[in-house]
View 1: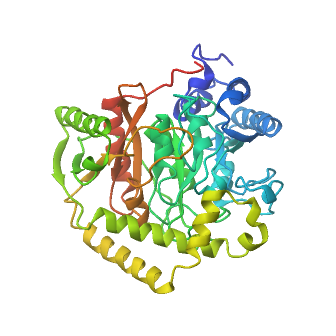
View 2: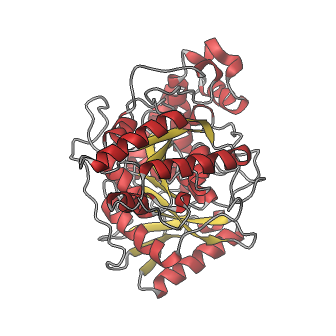
Length: 450
């Protein structure tokens, strides 16, 4: 097969699949290019827990045979990274927890199983904060080695941003898919709660955990979403609906955006100014924009979210913490220790606040509008923190689908993200709006290691 002149690791998922389907790209060549890229960049970025080179090569050979014999699946030959809280057949799943270092359950997460069934190749397991919580990882941000890539999907975002893999699975309990995507200048997509099965994923907070996707462009995120979403009898919280069929329409009607004014005073001046300039650009390109405020206090939403996460995390770790206390990171251990003292009455009240918020939020949008705001309050901070999750949290609390797309760079050359959200189960509306905006704003490429 004749390979493209472009460096293969620069290909997006959709571009790579198009070339493989046309016979212009070998899955084996693509995997080798990504393994070589990872080997050269990993010592600096540290995005991977482990790269499954042998398994990826074997799967690439099978994908090549499948193309040759006319039986290739929709993702045949596409390498994907997997956050190290998803049980993955043949690979340990550690959640950055020493006692789980060699944990290999007999089950595989539904999301990973559906990727494999579609022909995707699992390139390896990406770094995560411990149990997808607070304590920072060793991973570095490709845009600046002294900056955090965010948490908890740190490895997935850094690996995608640094062109080690075209797409990866992440997860979000509060802000752990969108925030690292924004910090690393890539796309992070969190569907509605219940769209993607949580089966086979190590939990943190069972009513808030959202599997998510990190990719280089909106079309790639939509591609993986359409593959892994759908009902799963092993996760009773999944929606009893067929898997979504999505059609990208980047040149369709401009989206109607509702700029949430609550977030602007809470952001740094550079992020706030950048967002306003970004919205002006989109309005000049044809988008209708109006300002609005949340129908409930942002601080009340944030407090309710924090309490629910804390109580549910205590439940998830009720057996592990007493047995393995010394293996927990200090931030997570402290969070759980304090959470043990939260009365059940407070948890019930937080859930009532959540229900009222869901009811009131339906008054925010008219017709086919989507909300817009910064993805994070600042660009990526230094590495002792995973960053501020406050701006992403409301959509996790409410279960609304949300997405972060790169909107440009700040004065220091660091990525800034535009966050969009839509009502529950309106992923198609959200993805169309995001792709339209992406076409007007462009994509980013980190300067390091290129």
